[in-house]
Length: 304
Ligand SMILES: [Zn+2]
Ligand SMILES: [Zn+2]
Image (cartoon, rainbow, N blue to C red):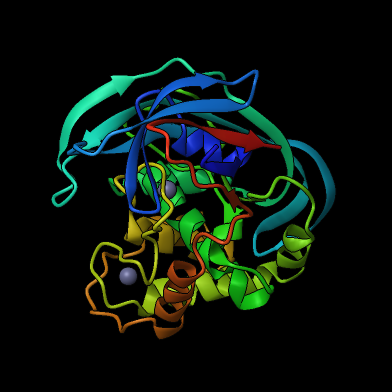
């Protein structure tokens, strides 16, 4: 055995065909045995590509524990079902990240119960965004990224501890129009309820970042997330800002609809940039044990 990996991480990195790097050596997963929680790997010294999974995660509200006012509506926290599906992978040129092959997989979904906080976005905000030629899902995606990334400003945690639903142009699943942040660790660590307690300040901070970040269309200091499963392809900063203003009650339907196009160049949001750096620094602190093997064929254990 060369390594043990936490199952919730393993589903995104260990699949048949995945290139797995361990202590400077490259392995290709040749057989994923989910029932046995083992992946067989083969040492490959000449592998010339990387692999990146294609996946999506849906978050379903299971039950509300508590609700309170937030701007025009309410914020809630409670139990949420998280369902992640890896449906294939890309083979990439390491330097350029150019896709050289796309492979489809049929793997069972990984499901677990977690805790989340969320805001259901009223339909009128969807309508206002659409009327301005903003893709509402792109605005929602951007604001959701930003809200997740700002949680560590209010609660002692890493940015990677909270996750959200990521939107894709190709997705055909109907999803609720909801800003949601769930605990990636899959159990109640208290992060969601603490973030919920600070939700008004959290959403106000999100709006401040959107209004002050100097970028044009989104950057890692505001709505771009290093952990986006959809490669940040569907984001709209202007829409995220308008959505935040509406949710906080700064604009009603009529005034939002009459809102002119942005003309001023905003300033850079330093706090968000610092936060993003912290996310990068703290990225992979996962529990693992490693055992070296000198065999060309080996295995990886997945533990739960
Ligand atoms: Zn930005
Ligand atoms: Zn995303």
